[in-house]
Amino acid sequence: MENAVLGIDIGTSSVKVIAVNNKGEVLETMSEPLHLIQPQPGYNEQHPDRWFEATKSCIKQLLKRDTMQHIHVKGISLSGQMHSLVILDDTYKPIRNAILWNDTRSTAQCATIKNIFGAYVLSNPVLEGFTLTKLLWVKDNEPNHWHKITTFLLPKDYVRFKLTGKINMEYSDASSTLLFDSKEKMWSEIIGAQFDIHNIYPPLVASGEMVGYVENTLAQSLGFQNKVAVFAGGGDNACGALGAGITHPSDTLCSIGTSGTLLTCEDNRNRVYRQNLHYFNHVIEDKAYVMGVTLAAGDSLNWLKKQVCSHLTFEQIMDLANESTIGAHGLIFTPYLSGERTPHGDAYIRGSFVGLSNTHSKSDIARSVIEGITYSLYETLVHLREKGKEITHITSIGGGAKSDFWLQLQADIFNANVSKLKYEEGPCMGAAMIAIAGLGWYENVDAIVEQFISYEHTFHPDKEKHKRYMNYFEIYRDVYDHTRPLTTRLLELSREEK
Image 1 (cartoon, rainbow, N blue to C red):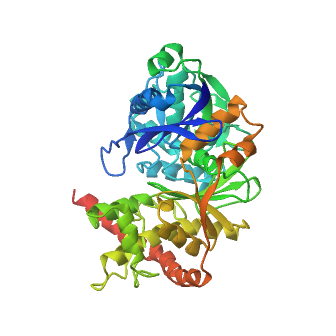
Image 2: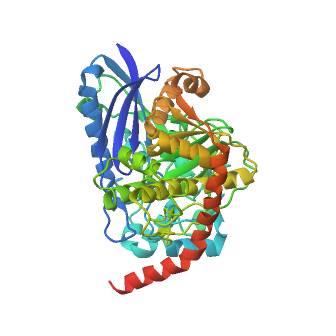
Image 3: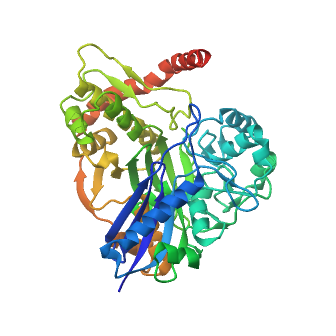
């Protein structure tokens, strides 16, 4: 019999489970879609039990596969969407739908926090996406729910609780709440006391800590043949970083999914970042990471496909974009369809095409969207370099790594070598690696990374093309300031007419 672990990712659009052996080989994979609940514009919710039901379904189906019949699953670890708020009553049942990371209803609560503490709290910007702002929104708008709260969790912590019966939150996810002191690895009494938040904090554990076993009755119903250890895991960005081998300060990751992130490992806690960059605990002991976020990265590409290129596959859209040229014949797109996180921290800015004329083709429009997404991520890279980070190599994962055209475009804009992984499973692989480390199958995390991570191809920057892109990037950066007052007025008018 061969031993394996399961890596589980509780995403926004799906739950995904992979089975991995001790060589880093993916034996099986299974996923199940999730859907958003959007009661009004800017509101994004999901019911926590839907995550658990999807997780159970994936595990059951995966374990029934022929390839798993001679496999012993020894451990499980989880990754999940960060920031999203789950509130539980005294029976540990959800009081309401979870309020997700991309929910923007808490602008008033952000203003309250900023008035007291300023624009940054515990090294992180005060933004609608963070968990504290959602808690305060519940307190201000749903007092009947607020008074029922016994504890709060984040998505993968809730699923882990349903698997084990144990309530915990681990450091990487806790550091994304605006309530956690990353240096001291404890909840901040100062922040909580200011907003009358007491006695609802879950116990904290390290990402690699074993928190329990899958409960016996549940384990049997899922199809496990033996006791299965469950390890705490981490937030999706931290697990995605580990799954891509981002474990040292010289390592940088570009990840393009629904949102997009540019993330670099960090061990210098004296370095101060601004520009709405996030500073969170890594899943690796005593490591942190700095991250910038584009809220509508792949989501901008989804919009393009749905509204402009519905007859084309994503691969065909890339081919179409490649027919245009650098700068898309003078057309710039800003990917602010859902507001923007880094560097602007603006929930109300909206996207735009600048320079559009009757001579522009679909290929120009497609290219401008891809360039605009990449420019947004490059803004994070610019700030990191300005703060002294030397970044010459970037690992690219997600939708942006499925096209050689886009990978080369990233290399040219970022002015860095960009590598594509030979095998990419995203946050699931990072979660699986945490379980493998916890089971002691390798001496340390570095040994796991060395065995599991390899590159398929590296794309090198064209210096001349980089200079040409920078001419357009300068204009791209100016678009925000010029369109912000216009989009604010447009949003006000649209609200008045409803």
